[in-house]
Image (cartoon, rainbow, N blue to C red; front, side, top):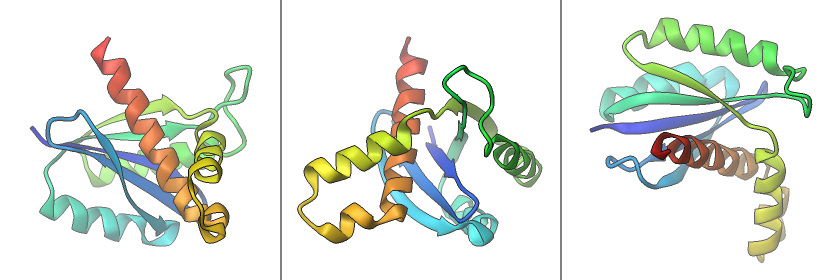
Amino acid sequence: MGRLLAIDYGTKRVGLAVSDYMQVIATKLTTVPTVDIFPYLNEYMSREEVDAIVVGDPKQMDNTPSESAKSVHIFVDALAKSFPDKDIYMIDERFTSKIASQTIAKFSKRKKDKRDKGLVDTIAAVLILQDFMEMRKK
């Protein structure tokens, strides 16, 4: 069994999280500048076994696509072409960045962490992945 890879896509940065090989625990991986995401993913996938990719799907409160949804869907299309052997799932990412920011503010003592947008993106990816794994259990 391989890992699951979660992606919190943004136009500036991409937050990444991975599961363990048993697909039980999600952990933060890194944040990558958006322009570097495909070289990073190519390198990562060449050394790690990844079963599937989970991408956050940005939605409004009324369940309609958010402003950033178009760029995310373009990214997912490119992802599918680059990795045709990988299953790609999209999962609602509403509130993940807000929850990530609140979690960092609550548990981090360092002011630097509270302003680190890259950390917010990786924590959001962890939340996306945890939600996905929980949904699969049901």
